[in-house]
Image: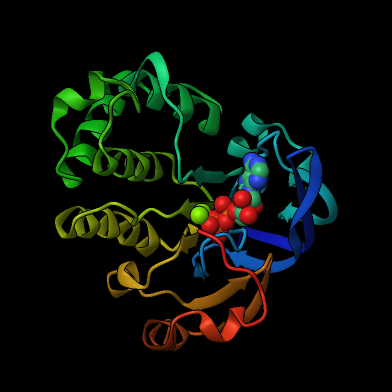
Length: 255
Ligand code: ADP
Ligand code: MG
Ligand code: MG
């Protein structure tokens, strides 16, 4: 069983000519087969955690460790992280001009699997995965994220997730900007992957709405750069009723 272990993670960013500590000691363990939700107010550092795990150069790790099956993730290049089995879907995915969805997926799959998937089975695999996500086949020929609607970006993320089958998937605000139908399709995709029992999922979200479709095994409340409470799915119900106020008293809340 693969395990992602985050220990006492501290991260800073440069903003307005000053160094600002955003993550202030994050501790979290995600095992293959488990679904964790990280919930918290805007500006608490949830996306910073996702970007830091992705190896984004804007975020400087100043303390702590991240390992996947004991291997030091922080020492890995972005490609090596993907090969090791980490999948990161970002809140603001980048456009990749001139690269079609179809080519992008095949290149990613080749990197993750260590060999190019056989063309004929691959085409079928992609087609079936797209059908499950109610995606138009023409979508495969579009450039990655270029002019994608919010819903298309999220479907594209889940398509990658289904095809790449990582050990641990980190999904940042996969629910934001989705109408109810798209939310259902996206949630079903996450649940299908989850049912394989082979993927650990870290679902980062501000809203409890998606947790009606995806029942987490664990819920963590994130506030001011760290996890301040952990519990089961019932914690999400409490947050839905009471909001984050109890966790942010005395601290600044932006956004
Ligand atoms: P969340 O995802 O919980 O809304 P973020 O991680 O996006 O929170 O942001 C946490 C804090 O870090 C905010 O105050 C935000 O302005 C700051 N921050 C995040 N990324 C950057 C960056 N690249 N440059 C400057 N400040 C940043
Ligand atoms: Mg935010
Ligand atoms: Mg965010």
